[in-house]
Length: 149
Length: 231
Image 1 (cartoon, helix red, strand yellow):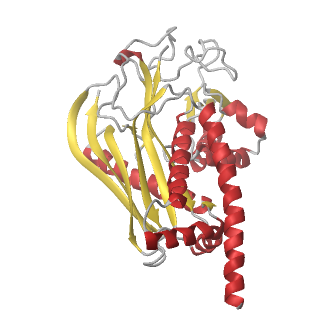
Image 2: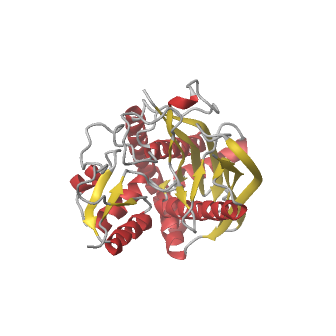
Image 3: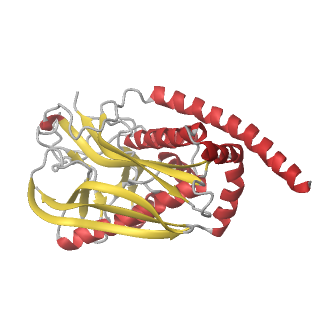
């Protein structure tokens, strides 16, 4: 009985706090994405600017470790039985990647463009065989170029 | 009279560092407020401390390095000579670009092939350029040394792990881990830079990072690239 109550409390806490935190995070992501919209990050290896116009270049990177809440973990566990789209983890990786890209842009500062962007994700903190996605790290890196206007 | 030095900061932070964290650390290290911090991060060179002695300048450099930012120490010209020193508030960032090799004669715009380099300082005080594209823009590769790599394996911290366990319930960002992984990535990069330095390279191109979880609670951070010599 006690176990069930603890479980339900954790579930409710995970749902409530998790949803709230996620919404807040998405709001902040959307806001910052809008603010850095003038700094494109592209996966192309070079952009069509003459080399002598490039004023500066350097490696920039950003990373974020995001974990999923208790409720979603249970939900995903249930989903594992039936198969199909695991929506709760989709938002997790999406948030981690977008946050990493934003941090990379922040580091680039007043650069004009970031080329050759790579985004990588790795599951870290494997706690046991069952819960294999505890939290997830996304890292984005690229070369920031400052181009003369 | 001994030489005077100026400590100049132009908003550059070390690769792998989070801008927010660097700002926080600088704020506490320099005992400044938000306004003072905003003046540092304008994107153009700012004189943090003018006409000081070498020991103080070195101390500033150490503080900035510990916070994850680069600052330069410039020797002041004797009075009378034209001072190419950047102003605290520079109206035109182009005119005060600090990468020019002859600071005594500041051209209105740098020569066409002059690309401002963001150097990483190696352990012997040399300079190293790191990019993840195949070339260093504006420079020609003259020598190719092959692959260099650096890796580090980090286990989680027990205090951080406990907090992360709590945070795992509600989800969201695990700041402790983010910082831990950034520090480790920086270490992997430092090792890579050291390897390249020993080969005699002055740039690393095509850098890649990868993370893998090797054992329970430990992660490996790996950085690799191609060491080259550029002009």
